[in-house]
Image 1 (cartoon, one colour):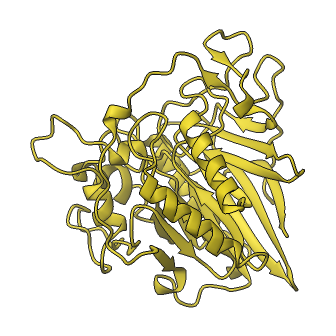
Image 2 (image 1 turned 60 degrees about the vertical axis):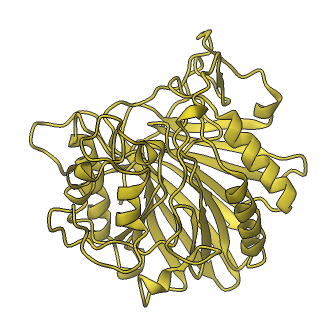
Length: 382
């Protein structure tokens, strides 16, 4: 039976998302996106990669910001804990079937030479497939690299290949490349459509008009399959957050909310990384419908981001963009990962999210530790 850790919301911390004052404009860091490897509208039916996957129950991991060039211990700890959930699961139907990465696989500039240490080696024993959307660090380009390369070149080789094969810079890893059709794409399963966006390099994200048009069309297409399928939206840059490093992203809030309104569609769940902690926020719209916004960026990068204190003058929640959004739960002092379970019983579909954490300090040489359940939420798909 999983242990459950009770989190107490400190009264001195914000219970709403915040904006960081005097945000710098680094939009000059925007990088052109690579050409797609698949056909529009960039959908990948999961059966093409995982034939025989259950149509009654979908279980998978989600996590972001796993890479680290300074201290890989936390990344290995999280990866091993996810592996244990597979090997020790009670019954085949409860085993996590894959990992959906929320971006920042490799720091600091998405270089091919970093993939062995930061991806292939830590996940060499993870039993499931790994899908991904790119983060800002995956999309960046190192100006001091001795070997010139383009933005997302290595990411595309690993995750957006035209066929499954060994990756040249994987140090002979048995983990083959994945055939995602584009850096923004939709993973189609029998119980959920998972729309993944590419929000580029700048600190608060940029999404082009071309991708916006695609996104609105994908929202409408996925909505047509509800309530038989859940609709999840994933992007690296967190729209709503209360952390002290980034704060909420006005560009991503405006992008998502405008797209939801134009499409006439809101997802069941929005998931992000970028911020190195866990947050469960909930936005209640004017019609009374609530949508959870999850931040799950505590996947391994050694620097965690604390929740902002109410007396910290660098932050404010005084903005109509942040109205009706509440921070319901958070973990800002331990690394961890999400497990999502979507299950169909008769005609009803239920999504359950569980966030597991790992101790921040371990005895030297100990890379295996049971994860502790820190938060659980349930969404009835209607």
